[in-house]
Image (tube, rainbow, N blue to C red; front, side, top):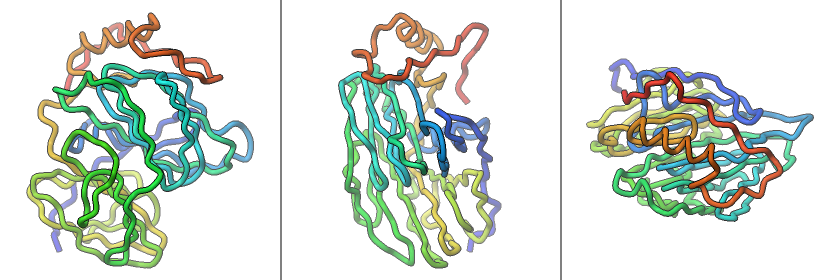
Length: 295
């Protein structure tokens, strides 16, 4: 059992479209895990009244948005003309590339629980054509008392169908009963572990539900102990050389680049056709007086 103190990065609470979220990435001390540059744990929420989650049309650049649905249903619409509900156990993957806009709306279900991530595209593919893909079936199996679903990359000999462009992995792991497991890691990957609910220990140390546990390159295994009815997500990937800049919903490589994305959105150009959503488009925050820098 590794007794080295864990690298812990507390998340912060935000509100997205009326849903409380724990934002684990980016944070001040840890901006990325591999190419994963954004990690929101949204919910669990229960809507007795009101429309649920409502996020109007907004833009993205140079990234993939990755939504893993645990509870509830959300309708995705985008500027390519896609209109796709996502339900529990499914992934929506939207490749922004040179620019895309989309909206997200609850479909009337009372409960909502999801993990929403961004993947920074490799520098040479940042401006690829936008695309939307829906994945209703993912590899799902049991190992060491854990129910595992491979969301991206390869894990335990199973490969997810999700089309990503960097060496990375994401696995949802759930324990109905108390379980202890030793998970094999790739030494060339760095990893992050986020407890979604229940009790979790990583290498013998408690992992709180509001913090990201970071595992640097070089490790070959990690020990996890789960209480009954516990769930966590494991992310990993090769470190992303040079990092990225993030402002609002844009990923870029320089302030000038992001200022250009912002100007295009404000002028209504560069993000495809209008999204067929009844919700009004989101207004971008100003960059006046802001100096972006990579960490």
